[in-house]
Length: 88
Image: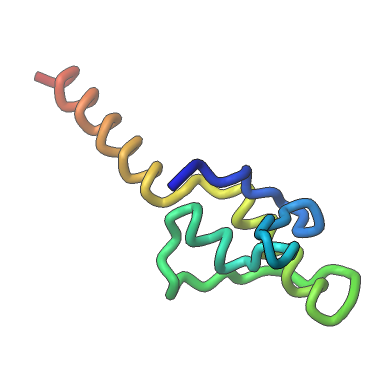
């Protein structure tokens, strides 16, 4: 277990290096790294490019620009604690 590379918004730059293969991480793999549940649906506009690329690039952008859900939960808990202390 080690830190994952940054989730980039352009899939061409987000390669997975393995002894046997060099390939781009899928949107789902990048979403898992970001702590999104597998049933989370990414909805996006269509962009230019090949058939798969025109649907996937906006989804890579969504994942790459997203705040990981688990980080959002922790930040929310910290803010709630600070506000609770400030009001008491």
